[in-house]
Image (cartoon, rainbow, N blue to C red; front, top):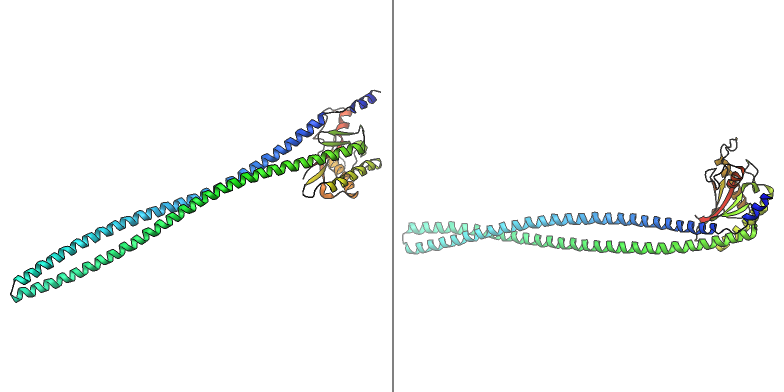
Length: 344
């Protein structure tokens, strides 16, 4: 009679699983948003790093061109100084030529005239050389001016490229921020859709399975006691468990028709055992036993028409107990098969 009263007590409505379901969903959303934020920060850091490298290279080129410009300006000043010296020398030679001409006009002796003419010719030759040197210096100055103008154009182009790079960097940051916002919105929509379908699916399962004491809702999972599906230390489905699994398969097939193809989801079947060790040739540990039981359920659902792409089998052994006790009742609660509708 005590067992009967205990079972009637378990049929009371328990609001705690609903709170756990909401909290787990919020936790999943928070973890995913945190992952998206970390990924966006990583991509933004990589792009900013590449922009900083390009900016450093451009600034190095500007410094190099500035040094070249200073050197060219120094050469230009030196060339102008040489031209000034050449012009002064040319003026001096012209003055000497005029003096010699005046002296030649004043002296009437042939020897002095010949000497004056010779000196005049020498001065004329030197004057020609000075003119040639002045012309060469003027040409060199023109070339230097052209080089300086080209350097200034290159510096202007580099500054423009640097401004364009800064603008692209700002646009990239803006696009990343917009992408993060859109991802958050899309994630929230997907989570809401999956939560709605999960609620509908669990509601349908409750209607199909009825108020059975050996089938419970724990958080966001349906829990089947292992005894209704398997014999002790075995992973072969019991014949009397197949009708319940057939109803589960029918509900899953109907759910596959309703959920859009672009919404990734799976039904995860988790196998759990109690903490009593097992060591048989077929199941060396509880991990093998729990995984084999989960695989048996998944294979049967696939045979009944459920898409294998929407099924996942996992074995947890005795390491995720619901009850930390060591008595028979606690061990019975921990021997279970859990169904969880979640994202892929």
